[in-house]
Length: 208
Image (tube, rainbow, N blue to C red; front, side):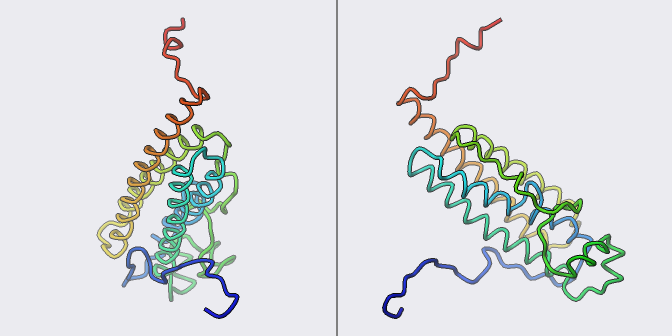
């Protein structure tokens, strides 16, 4: 680096998992794009976690949210690549037959953040409560919803292994993220309990 230059970001310019789809399939692209800009997709996940990290009470939970939030950006790149390769070179007539006529009219074969149903991405999908327990519980649910979506997408792929393999990788990462959020939640609960901020009163279970 030259004098006065600062290293602001390190980005390895390769996908987290290789994607090489040989046969375009716009029908699949119409569904898979939901994990790009849908309510349970990677864009929403990344912005949710990177925003929630500021409200975490310790460095460990902040680091977990930061790590997962940035990895979700890598997953967004993967999903965008899948959608691009499934539609690359496909003519307008074929796209229309696959149910992408309206999409093509607005976006061509560009990759635009929207749900499978056609709704564009909305910031309302980012749940940030400012309460670490509530936010981490939300994140646990978000990872399970993403896992379930990937499983549905894999079912729709039938025998296209070029698409199934990266989707399986993404599904497995959702499981890992779920486990790490569980770790963060336990740590935050312990920390807040020490400060008597968060208490679980089992007597409340006996209320009639």
